[in-house]
Image 1 (cartoon, rainbow, N blue to C red):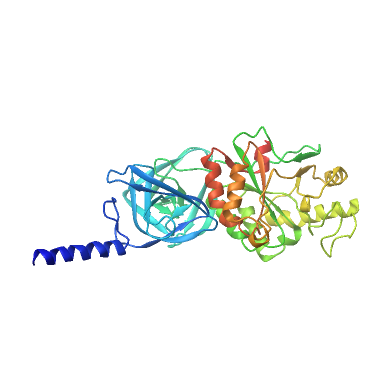
Image 2 (cartoon, rainbow, N blue to C red):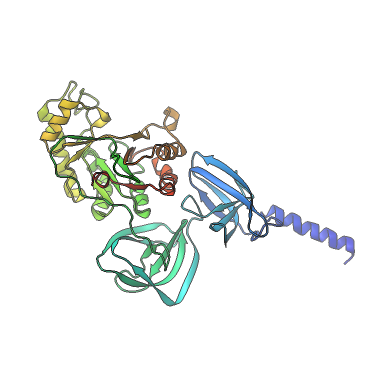
Length: 416
């Protein structure tokens, strides 16, 4: 082969590499192609030199999640595992693998032979089962009262999260978050509701240092409700749910309350009435009085809702209630207290997620940013299980709160 022919061949190879997504001079780049999900919110891509020192950074904010292509996944010193993107606004850059930037499915598997031992300390744990695509099939809480150990036969990354798989015994095939040397237990607390009868309005709890209560109303639209609950389970996030009696009797609402019943380590419930009437002013539904309801009507709305919800959720809604539309005054609080609900739970951050984006509601990135920016000790965040962009906001929201030292938790945890 002549020198000219060799030069042409080399040039063709270089062009082919560039077209396939390869990059000359960047460590670990290959021509492989696979999908990566980038969640809504801030994303940062970097470039490295050949020694894996950061050369440049570029940050973007995604209003909604996107799926892009990548060519390489490498574990290197600056921060752990990195994924090189070949499409989208961060093409040609590496993103840090995490719960907001990950390869869908099960990746990075290491099989242990012989099996290894992971120590589980005293506390509450959450274990999971996944299908072959990394979709969570089931989550189950486990309370460890005496330090114990389990055998694990492999570690994997499932949608950006590290897990180890239990090898034998009752929990064989279940996955524990974390690594062999550092398994992760639940760090929040569902807590125990207070028993006092004194009227209290809860908007925030300043004494609850480093904690933020995530609360979700459940009434009306329920499309993403079960997906939101499953994501909270996967992230081991404690939350307070305020269902209406009407919503609890739907198929989706019943499924949500079944998950709440199965996970007392994560969830608690409050009361959002049966029909979601405006109990201060009247109106907003065919089952609602057009003028201010009587005290008897208010008590029935609360007590009947609890009678519906408690068997489905496995616990009563007392002592928490949230007035529909936030419409409340001192007289209404007194009536609610007489029905067993002295704690009127309001909020310090309202995501307004019940509005569509077209109607002035938030994008997923907006909601996540608002909650993170509004964080303070004992903040109470209002969201909805039917929120239009709430499910897509949760990954960045949870990651952002945790990164700034805040634990998402329940109202009871704030008040303890």
